[in-house]
Image (cartoon, rainbow, N blue to C red; front, side, top):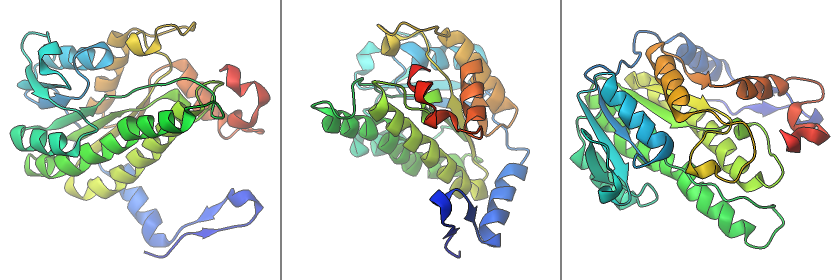
Length: 271
């Protein structure tokens, strides 16, 4: 594939080779491989609480044949009907072991994530950024590398990656977290292109604040986990590639093409 050519003027326009453009069009046009939860075998990371717990609960309710609930401590998984799996997503050895043990999986929900708030220039920000990249970005890659062959063997399947509205914005005190989610968004887009040949659906989920342990102490409107998961699974069944769960996510993405762009506006840090 020919390398992309970056034009001057802040690199705001990119001309890609016809091969690249054709591959992206193929991703957009790929139909008929949407993921249905009925009789699916689902693996959810970070499934012992919060959003992950809700993903597992609704998968069972929708008729999934089996739900693996990944957690660092399997004894912390209390939801009846699931299969607890020891899974620290930052440990490649545990990820590989999970793929070996869960060879019937057809849907992987990459939900596990961490958030550490603070300024980018504050002491400790480098360590915080490194930890969040390890959990929020590299874990998705580890899981994708380990489970892509499993999904291919089982008919294609799907990955559902939990991202964030701050993939596209950097509010005050959330610069490092935003950087990790922005990287996870681009990683998701890249994986979607690479996995389309094997018929694997890749859905990126963007949402604002969700009412979980992760957002305790944040004074902002929050969505119930049940609403987020319901809309995410509906998008998966509709063969979507990206789902903007709430109004704030829709507004922020639209703001990327505004003049000036949302992320350049001085009050963007208040979003």
